[in-house]
Length: 257
Image (cartoon, rainbow, N blue to C red; front, side, top):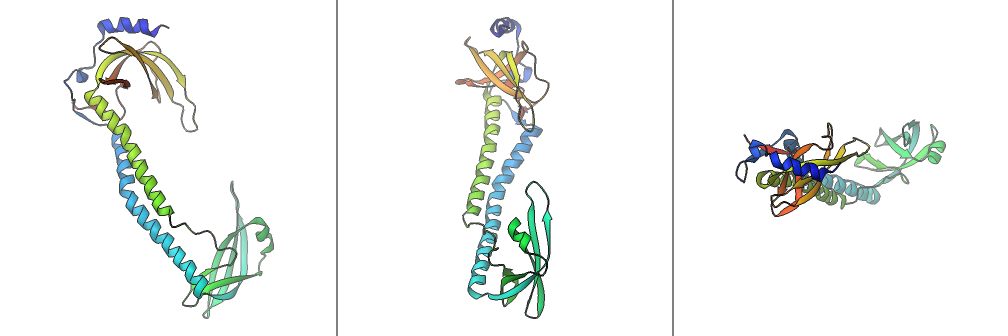
């Protein structure tokens, strides 16, 4: 199919939708999808300091506890009370034990490798190290577990802030193009399915004519009911940069009525 020939024919009678015939800048507002995306962006921005603070407190506390156990802890003996396997794609080999301190009994649990799990039968002795003033805080030497690095909270905060910023980019782009973009006729020139793990959108390719008469190409993804090849579209393009274009209507913004 010669989409450019269809485009020449479409230009003779094509008219933009009434809401796009208003003078620029047009009044626009968020759609439901746009509000949802904005809410996620705001959540990321607001969650950045909170997540960083909570993770920092957690990491700092864990490191302080580990230092206290090493410096001021006392050694004791524990006895394995049971063991089990947590099934799944990556099985976990778990061991529960009991130890006595300050006249009381305390229980704990460790995650071990398969070889260690085979040896740790019920009644097997385990070394423990605990704090005399708070015997519940303890560790099993050799099975202390990895501590969260102190830089991780800052990394996660940065990632959340970056995600929030990235989510605002399509919102800004859609708002500007719908508010100030120039409408033009377009014709669908081709389509193909895009296969991903979660969904299967269709990529639509189209050609459109600018006010100066130039013919350009664009593309978009459609989740369902893609327009047939040869269908006439309304395309909005940036007046000073026609390569920034999008088929109308938009998912994130609509014209205010």
